[in-house]
Image 1 (cartoon, rainbow, N blue to C red):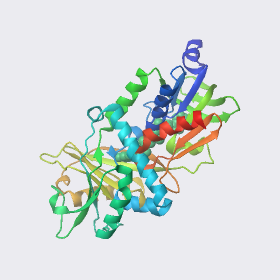
Image 2: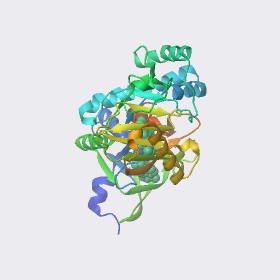
Image 3: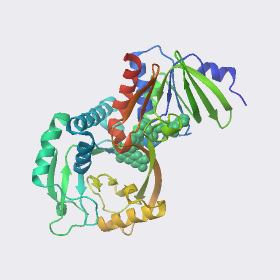
Image 4: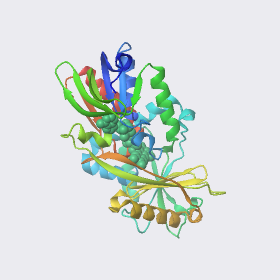
Length: 373
Ligand SMILES: Cc1cc2nc3c(=O)[nH]c(=O)nc-3n(C[C@H](O)[C@H](O)[C@H](O)COP(=O)(O)OP(=O)(O)OC[C@H]3O[C@@H](n4cnc5c(N)ncnc54)[C@H](O)[C@@H]3O)c2cc1C
């Protein structure tokens, strides 16, 4: 069955901009393009019927880096580039909050703790390292003393042996990922941007004055679509469309317990340089990650659950009520790729594990690169 005249005419013809990928980045790019070019015909397409990769499956951390992640960023990128990256995460987060408002996003700044369990891969930074990190990050966040050392026994419900220390990051928060996605979709719709789901882009052919996309749908088969400009925001799955980019998919698994009476841990949690993360959702506990262990899905989930039971004994009797996975886009370091692939096409991909914070900034940069360079 082919697209009807009406379908083609309404959605697939005379497009000024097509965005591939309806995650945070793709939708932010579409919104920014609408701001700069109110008259453009803009369509966002996504292969997933629910229109969500990591953006609708993430853990809801509004994070910009734990101490060990930031030290890794500094080593990989150098102090200045790593600071620019943190600044973009921070600005993206402020942009997200000011666009939608904390209450719409279910966002609250609750702070995060970085734990260093004995079985973990990282060690507690020294007082001097912490002071140096605080000085280094201050120009990005504008706030002194982001990180402080605390005793684990000051945290409710967390198992603590004498001397266990943790790092508290006072600027991080948590949001409701479902609320964030609904807010994005409502705003995009209100701005007259169509989001078409169930459309997979199979190949891209960028020409001097237009971009041709081969698309396929379950119900209407394959056809091609032409747009004057293109933003590719396909994150983890980008190598299928633009093989020369350094982006690999990496699966993350997430477990969420049933409700636990009287349980309420107050902060987001980072372990093993962010490879493991945990958070409360009301009186449930979520734990996820573990890809650095190099185990299969069953073994990763079992190890995540064991770690959760060790750290929060109250979770031991709670069944797992939800379990899911999603894909990160990763590469040689944690900086996203925002790159022109032709004069009328930009790729904005490789969002890694902190896309909630930096996503809006990356979508915005993609459109600015597309229209101004
Ligand atoms: C389990 C998990 C937990 C996470 N937790 C956090 C967290 O707590 N905090 C945080 O900041 N980040 C977290 N992340 C990372 C964060 O979710 C991502 O960095 C961010 O959502 C990426 O946004 P995006 O728009 O670039 O990509 P995505 O949200 O992945 O969107 C890409 C879209 O492109 C579509 N697509 C791909 N290929 C095609 C194609 N060929 N044709 C059409 N459509 C296509 C996909 O269907 C997808 O919807 C987590 C990720 C996962 C998987």
